[in-house]
Amino acid sequence: MLEQLLIFTRGGLILWTCKELGNALRGSPIDTLIRSCLLEERSGAASYNYDTPGASYTLKWTFHNELGLVFVAVYQRILHLLYVDDLLSMIKQEFSAIYDPKRTSYDDFNDIFQQLKKEAEARAEEMKKSKQVGKPVNNNLGRKQGQVQNGSVDGGSKKKSGGESGNDGGDVDKSRGRPLENGNLRNNHVGKGEAPTMINANGKENGASKTGAFDVNKLQKLRSKAAKKTETVVNKVPKEEPKKKITKKNRVWDDSPKESKLDFTDPVSENGEQNISVVAADEGESMMDKEEIISSDSESEEEETEKDSNVDSKKKGWFSSMFQSIAGKANLEKSDLEPALKALKDRLMTKNVAEEIAEKLCESVAASLEGKRLASFTRISSTVQAAMEEALVRILTPRRSIDILRDVHAAKEQGKPYVVVFVGVNGVGKSTNLAKVAYWLLQHNVNVMMAACDTFRSGAVEQLRTHARRLQIPIFEKGYEKDPAIVAKEAIQEASRNGSDVVLVDTAGRMQDNEPLMRALSKLIYVNSPDLVLFVGEALVGNDAVDQLSKFNQKLGDLSPSPDPRLIDGILLTKFDTIDDKVGAALSMVYISGAPVMFVGCGQSYTDLKKLNVKSIVKTLLK
Image 1 (cartoon, helix red, strand yellow):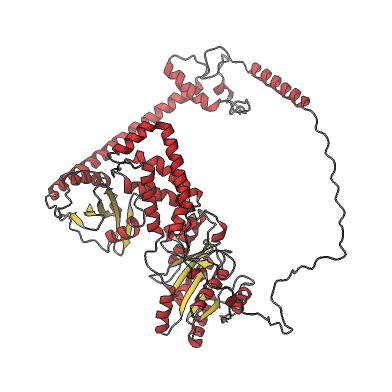
Image 2: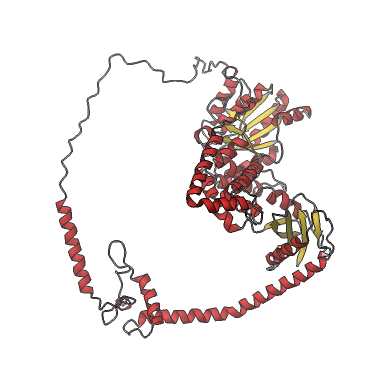
């Protein structure tokens, strides 16, 4: 039974809802559908499942893109209603016929809906009955087909009586006796009792041509002749001249070797203390505070590609393309969009976007364009690209603004430090980019303290200690083999005592499938409740970005004892300077998690940290 059915505009105006259903929905499934699915370019999915205490709903929807209408049906997930898709398509057809943009009330649609619902339910019942009746028929057909196929194989010694039996035998033997590239027959190494199935008593092969008998001895003779020919050809090949043996050259020792500095570490005194100068003050302004200028190279390249495509289209069919561009197309259909969407999907995948994400994006764009009228002097490819560009900008633009500096000052007024936890897999650069964030905060006169909570990897504490000495900031450490959750808690208490504004917590790298380490991370986040959880990920990853982020979020939710667990709040993308135009990892990560990219690491110095330029990323993806 349907729980609710709504018709509303893309602007959010509800035009009609079924009053006779009148069931009060638990939670807010339709608001969640709009926020988490329709606005996040996931509208290409078949359905959306919504869980709330006491109820589980399935939501299905369809669009009328020309009129800007959305039709949504809600029903209990346990029911598996088969007629919902059919009902939505019929309602879409009938309602679009009476729709008027100036009209806001459609009470007269209730009777039409009841009639359409009865028709859809009756059609679904007929389909159920036809399936139940058709099951034994299909089994009998399968048995008959099996008997025919077995008869054609076992009765190979009999002559073909008709065209149908000959075809059946030919199909079977084609699959078993098809010649391979090397000239041998498939399955020619047969066991006992299998030879009669391939060749009949008269020497004829099943399904062979009518030219005459087939002799196995002839085949063997031909094989032996072919082998002799290959031997003679091999013998005729001229022998290669033996290569001269390369002798190792004697090393020439230089009496006066060049003095080159091999040790780049800092000088150490007799007491073991390092004499480190303040390096951070000399590195200049962080790239986070600089506005990135987008070059016009991408625009010129786009224009060149458009010109090339125009030339190709003129070559293919100048008159037809010109006529279609002038007249326009009545309504875009899925078949019209498929070629352009396939090319767009391939382009996204070459830019390192995960295949699953690229496919979902193309499905969502197809759902938003299907049924729309193509304007005059516009091509389908340019329309699809414009829709994809809007979708990418909408995905990469953060849903909520996270201003760390503003939140730091708000926490300072409350008398507590602002805590940031850095998480991620092994070797992505968590400690290095934590130091870059610390340097950026120092430039804004924020007191920073580091917490060395990577008590697992050898050298992790020393690495963070080196960054802290270079930046002249305090570090809280307890050595190795300690509980990271307790170390972080003591670090936050120490920051409250010494007046630090921000605590940057470094954690051990862990794979998303390592449950003991993921449980320890979940405990650290649960015990300390940080203000920001940053996932540090490489820009080099492709499909693995989806697996990493989805499993990190899943483990943090499943292993946390809290009923409302903390998940990943933001993303720090590292090694961005090594990928050229393969920027798809940013899109994959944001799409799968819904968290924004807050920082981008683009070098090895402390200043090499910048914001994500959404327009630049979108242009690169579609270039």
